Image (cartoon, rainbow, N blue to C red; front, side):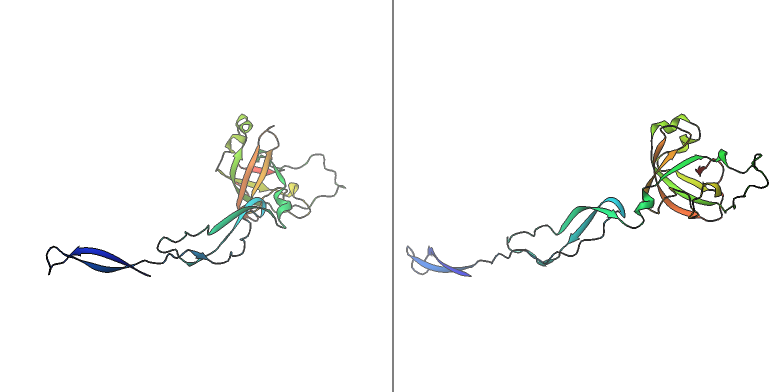
Length: 208
């Protein structure tokens, strides 16, 4: 917009006199920021338990010439994941050192007793995320330290009717474990991978 104003300056033609000069200044219009509508909330970051979800919106018109700045473009809130796999995530794995491997013949078995079908073992590789101080009291459980990759073997005798060991974990989800022969030794880990028809190397652990 134009705003006229008068400025008094010396007259170069008539010394000792002055003349009025009208100036016009241009004043830019301030433009406030305009944003669009909020998008949908994202999926909960945790399939099981406490996590977070967020949503965002885009700038339609950026602020100019001193206009009002843009409001928040991202929002986050808490959520609680409860997917179908969560029941397995609540299981606590009970473990023992691999020195307890049941590879011996039972001297008390009678010929007429039903022999349990032997199923192939499988291995689960888990990254320890937390371990209590009590784990340091036993030689085998002292290896259960944060960020160490542990091989846990599920043998036939420890399998449930679903042909898996209780508490064998869920991929990329933190689950919990407890050492059966080390009182107070417990913690959490995250399953990274698994192998069928597998035997863990020495100094590993077994599911009970």
